Length: 331
Ligand SMILES: C[S@@+](CC[C@H](N)C(=O)[O-])C[C@H]1O[C@@H](n2cnc3c(N)ncnc32)[C@H](O)[C@@H]1O
Image 1 (tube, rainbow, N blue to C red):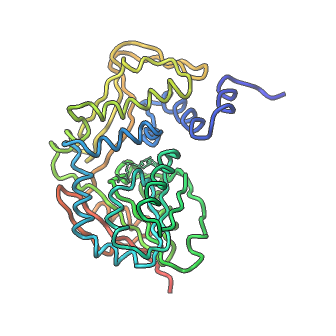
Image 2 (spheres, rainbow, N blue to C red):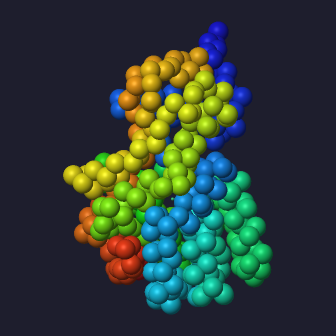
Image 3 (cartoon, rainbow, N blue to C red):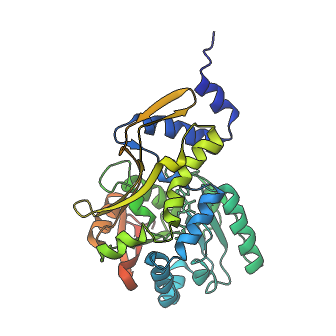
């Protein structure tokens, strides 16, 4: 006889992205500290909110990285190779990527990879319209899990570059084996023995600018953070008073990270899939860590993932682009 719990019934009825959100929410809300993984910010609404964040005066990261890509675009395009393959995990709207695509008219293929399926397909359509001769083959995948083998990438021998801008490495715990090291290991495998990883990070040079970037005056980051609760309510049928949580972002200098949280403003109970999670006033759900590693720390993490730092380009406001190559190259 099989047991049918409310959770199992709900999970079976959900599309895969929502079922993953449910599993992570049930585990994360029961933990201490309570957590919700930041990858679940990104449904279509979350992706559009992130695009708005990129336009905010406080969010220096996107503008500074775009300037870095423009300034060093010729060098980066040469590293990718005129007829190479470009794979971009977490491509989002791929706006900054255009600085590279503009310089690579004979690129063999561009593979934007993202967890936010609808937004990814919209991005691919926009790029096909802008670059009609470019093969754009989007891949819906979660890069925090094992990535598909994707052997076809390496079939014609073109060098593969994994382009990972946006300082997203900082969302992974740098010193835990299943965190940033595991992520870069997956990227090394995706690039293959003759490929490379172009990794964009924020060296975190100005704590005041960092604090403002994650807690903007217009409240867009707050809405982005709260989108996690909106998803629980609208996609999973959770009973949750979204307005009874507030957004917080704290710079934690000892860890060199921003911690984003959703803090309950009163005692309340969140109900999800037949489970009850009692919150006291002031209790938080940790939703994201954004580590701001020094260049040396990034290279240490890279080496542990079997990648050797080859070059590093610096941009404004502490943005850096690291070229990492497999420590053991194919002969
Ligand atoms: C901070 S945004 C960066 C977007 C863009 N790369 C940039 O630099 O502006 C993170 C992007 O990665 C995607 N993403 C986040 N976690 C992911 C995961 N685990 N697997 C795949 N995509 C993910 C999001 O949907 C979003 O498009």
